Image (cartoon, rainbow, N blue to C red; front, side, top):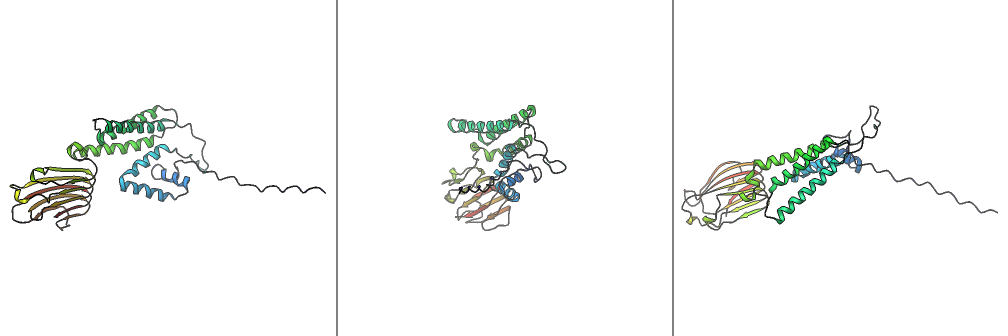
Length: 293
C-alpha cells in the first residue's frame, strides 16, 4: 500500500494593502487633507476636521499643522469622467521637502542664536525668517520641472504673513523690552515708587497686586495703565482705597468690584472721595477681575 499524499495547505489570504497617504480629491473642503487622513486611517473625516478646529481654538496650532500636512501630503489620483483613476502623475518635485527642511534648520539656528547670544530675535524675527524660507520655496517651485505643491506653500505662507502682521500691529504687547511678551506675570509693588506707569503682556495670565501699597503714602493719584492681549487678568487694590477705573474689554467675562456689566467707567469709593488710584485697562481676550484685598 502506498502512503497517502499530504493534503494541500489551505490558501492564505494576502494581507490587506494599506492605502497610500494622499490628499483626497473627492472628499475635501480645503485641500483634502482630512479626507486623505480618513481614507488612510479609516477614521471618519468629520472627526479629523473637528480635531483641526479644536487645535485651532485651543492654541492656534491647528492651522499650522493643517498647512504642513497640505504641503507634505501628495494629492490623490485624478478621476476620469467614469470614476476611473487617471494615469499616474508626473514625478514629484523635491521643493516641498527641501523647504520644510530649510524651515526647520533656520528656526533651529534662530533658537540657538537667541539662547546662547545676546541677540533677541523675538516673535517677529522667527516669523519673518520662516516666511522668508517659504517664499524661497515658492520661487523654487516656479522653476521646478516636477509637481510642486504650491497650494500648501501658499497656505503656509499666508498663515505666517498674518502672524507677522498681527505681531507688528501690537509691538508693545509682544516686545519683552517694553514689558510685554508671552507667559504668566505677577506684579506686587510694595510702595508707590515701585508702581509702573504701564503693565503690558501679550499672552498669558497676569496678576497686578496693588494691595500692599499704603494709601496714606499716596499724595496724588497713582495713574496706572494695564494693556493685555490674551489671557486672564486679575487686579487687586487696597481695601480702603478710592479707585477710578476705565475698562475697554474685548472677549471674555468682566467683573469689577462685583459688577459684571461689561466695559465702561467705574468709580468705587473707599475711605474718602479723592481717588488714590486711576486704572485704565485695555484687555483683549480673556477674563478680567478687579477686586479689593
